[in-house]
Length: 299
Image (cartoon, rainbow, N blue to C red):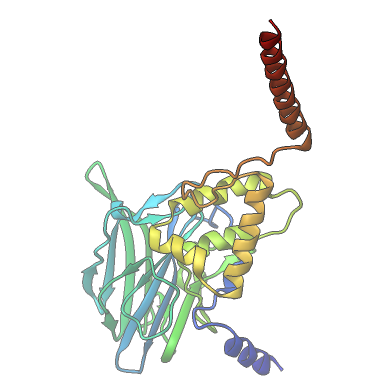
């Protein structure tokens, strides 16, 4: 029964399925972690000899946006280091996601960044750090290896996903890769726009537009133009439902420009009372004019 259910879910979901995360909008504080920037998912394809990296997904546990350009991303492939070329203004939104595509052969939602293909055989290690007064501060370090260290690489094939575990929505980061990660039955690559969607769809509470819409609009406004366009036009049912809720929130808050496109609010319709007053004033004006003309003629 479980196998049949898995086959059904896989067949009806898009290859960049996000259903696994749409109800996993994470809490801000990661378990046993002082870091706000974490590797959340790695996806690869390959056989026993070589693995090709498909994508990396990062999460931001902070309440403010992070510019990834301020950080150093080192990927060690079988102990050979590669520094990822992160351009300026690569924003990872507050409580959001950032998706890097390494020219993968699998279908993905619009990546936040495209980088050249990377491959490995025995191990891959991802390290994130930044400089503070000349000192290198390590933010996150994750090792996946066949050699027994870190998280054990045991699976081959297409679209193999390893994801960070969560505890009721709180990402786990104990520093023990074997404990913090697990193989997942399907990849769930999430870009910035989908991260915003997860925030919008995370819960259904009466009156939530009052406090969630300002945050959601700030997140949408911070998206790059390609990501904002994805948010506005992606035709998956999940994104259609997200846009419907977002626009409903905007309407309830009387915001006529939810995407900051420079739209002006529509003119308020003229009430019947106002129309009557205008007509009355016009009649008085015309009547007074006629009276004055007649009076002059009589004189």
